[in-house]
Length: 155
Ligand SMILES: Cc1cc2nc3c(=O)[nH]c(=O)nc-3n(C[C@H](O)[C@H](O)[C@H](O)COP(=O)(O)OP(=O)(O)OC[C@H]3O[C@@H](n4cnc5c(N)ncnc54)[C@H](O)[C@@H]3O)c2cc1C
Image (cartoon, rainbow, N blue to C red):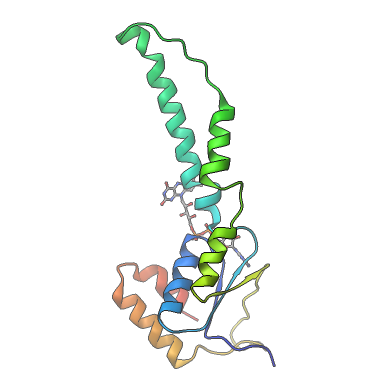
């Protein structure tokens, strides 16, 4: 028989990591499965990297206003500086080892790979335990983000 755990969190983007941490904090045994990079879209490709691009664009636009408003300025844009900043500061060269260490250090077991959730009634599907339901309900009531946890707790 396979290993039994209270919860398996499929996908460890921002939402999955948060759910995994909170279920673990609630005393459940938790396995997290991620097929690409921990942090998902937001950390690796979207929120932070795009803000660095937007910030660079804004700075260039502002600098181009100097001759009209305040004197003289020569501006030469250099995309490589933006790319380097994204690589080094935002994504650590798309290396999620630090995030993985933080997650596993908190007691969540990490499995790398693509997970497939069993469908209700199929072999391998166990309906959620009472302990799982109670922890999830407490989590939903304790936070303002009920919607996110409600879907995670639906079993
Ligand atoms: C350009 C851009 C800019 C954005 N800027 C902002 C911003 O400034 N602020 C903001 O709040 N939001 C922003 N967002 C939105 C934000 O990126 C998303 O809301 C957020 O990433 C969603 O997180 P998530 O954890 O729900 O999903 P995801 O980040 O998509 O994570 C899901 C994870 O699950 C994994 N996964 C999926 N299926 C499986 C499977 N079967 N087995 C194993 N792993 C699996 C994926 O690999 C992924 O890592 C932006 C989005 C874009 C596109």
